[in-house]
Amino acid sequence: MHDEESLVRRAQARDAEALNQLYEAHFEKVYRYVAMKLGNAMEAEDVTQEVFLKALGSISSFRWRGTPFLAWLYRIARNQVIDHYRRRPKVPPVSIDGLQLSEAGDPVEMAEQKNEIESIMRAARKLTEAQQEVIVLRFVSELSIAETARVMGRTEGAVKALQHSALAALRKVIAADGK
Amino acid sequence: MKESERFNEVLEECLKALAAGRPLESCLEKHPEQAEALRPLLEAALAARRASRLKPRPEFRERARLQFRSAVSKSAAPEKSRPFHFRFGFAGAVALALVVLISGVSTVAVAGNSMPDQPLYPVKIASEDTRVALAASPIKKATVLIRLTDYRIEEIVYLATKGEPRYVDMVAQRLGEHLDTIIALTAIRTNGRTSPPAGFAPGTPPPTVLPAPRSPENREQLKAFIQQRAEKNTAKLKETFNLAPPAVRPNLDRTIIRTSTGYQRALQNIERIAESDEKAPQSPPRNTRPGT
Image (cartoon, rainbow over all chains, first blue to last red; front, side, top):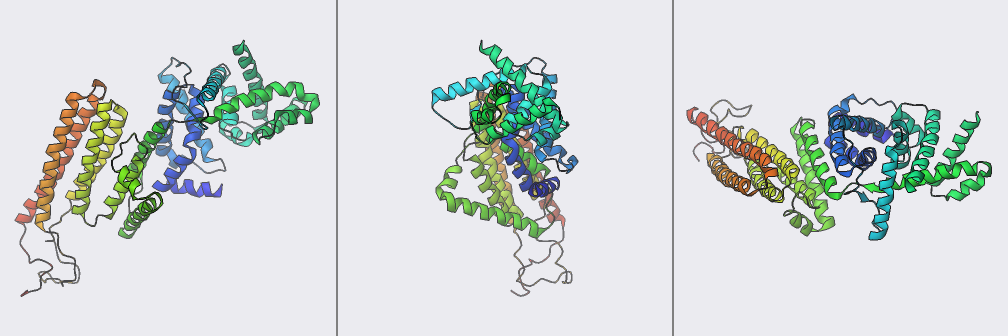
């Protein structure tokens, strides 16, 4: 954590190497978060770029209080997703065309996995905003309860309760969609 | 602790076990009294976790990286002193040398022909940055940058023909940065007829150990070079505009104006300095001793 703190401080001093390191460390996670929130690969690309340009412009406002830098990026990403919906009120269809999977298996297996992911994205859209957020942060972004609590501005106990209700809701939607 | 809180603790314990790669059944066996309630939740978590395998397209990753780095270079801290600047140039050269050693000279050579939508493009950009950093004088730096504008034009032509407006804009942005630097470099006086360095009385020729002045011939050569590239590259862009798909024409139009203006401003700088040098009183060349 200390390393990240010094990296962030260098980035705040406009050190290009530090800025690039932070970008490389978090790019994929932010992209995944945005893709899950938007459910559309092409739109996720535009918004992810906006997130990092926004972060670059406002990095000096970041205050180190033990909160990981990624949590700050997620907050920007969340706001960018909201702005994106405001600009384009018509929700785009769930589409993972153009999305990649980290492990390239055989084509049939990959097609199945893409279908599964598409159905998860579709199901996640039917949850409340908070439920969707906790599912993405905990299981897609793989944050701990403590980190999720910091991003969401809630207590750890509240996140655990929300996680429970979100998983129950997700299970219900997946089951209903599968019928 | 309430019953619901206790359950949430058990759920979290099982989720951690799943994240660590343990099978779902092992946690259910550990908590048989809650197994029925836990199973559907853990299955939903496993389903959601599959989305963690999502990755951005490599082409998008490259494009986004290029855009971010370009934005970083624009906002990066200004270089404060010559040694600091030199250190960066040297670091770049060492980095490139490592790339060459590790991956072979052929990688850099092949990268030299790569286009922005190809994997080796960042190597090409890195080697170009190193060439600029290692150029010893403003004129040499400007000459390297003018050659780089040729590469950017080739890339824009390639991308425009493919109908990629976003890529065209990104490369045009880098082209604009090259031109801005060329404009700044050509505004630097390069004729060596400024006041002698501190420690010498006015009019006293300094000793021969001082670096040789840059001759006006170099300036004239630079001017001719810029004129030639300006004509050729602007014509190339205009020709591409006529053949390009409509989607990229507005981007090309902006690029043509920007490029033509950039070259013209650099030429004006050179002419302005030449004029002021002609008006200024002559002094002996700095590397010639009296009587030699």
